[in-house]
Image 1 (tube, one colour):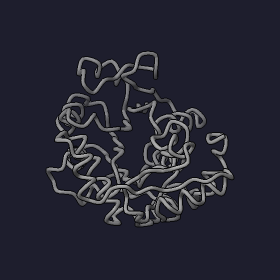
Image 2: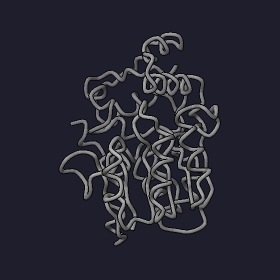
Image 3: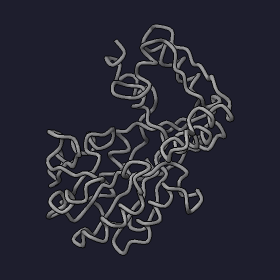
Length: 271
């Protein structure tokens, strides 16, 4: 049976639907009351055993930043000996980070584990701009304010990411591999705003208010989470999220969805 951590998140909800459609036994794990099938809280180790009872495959969304992420993942993998396959949701470029980087440290724990593991490293999600995404209100307000230097980003639709996750969770042949998952196009926020505005027939502008030094000063507040977001934006501004790979198409057996596909399917989100 497959367990999904982060089951109420951008990828977990879509992945749970795909597992249901294919009749694949699974449980949705969540720390939020009334959400999911079983309670699982990274910060409460007493919830782990019951949540993962009968589970042999795990979709692993990382613990919160600042919680000792790598140590918690290591403890879970050590405790739950019945788990034989783990698919870790990471981020594009994390495999190239310093070994002590907190997110890279989680990858290293999984890569050193003696079971079957796969690491998924997606680019930025297009669903950040639809309902529930962090920039949805920017779109409806008419200005997307995102400090990226307007460098290209190979945006990915989370539906394609979920399909890729389904493949590596349920099929053999992906052990001990990392996949960099992107969409088929790479463009900056200004072009995204222009194309989105044209599709919804009202102006959407792009504002890029911060340089690299300002990004660090604004987001790096001394916390692990703040440092993560600051580094993420600096990486985008340096062009490190521009690469387009063939990994998504290789896994899902077709070309990934385009930006226009995403907009067409989410038009109601911006009405």
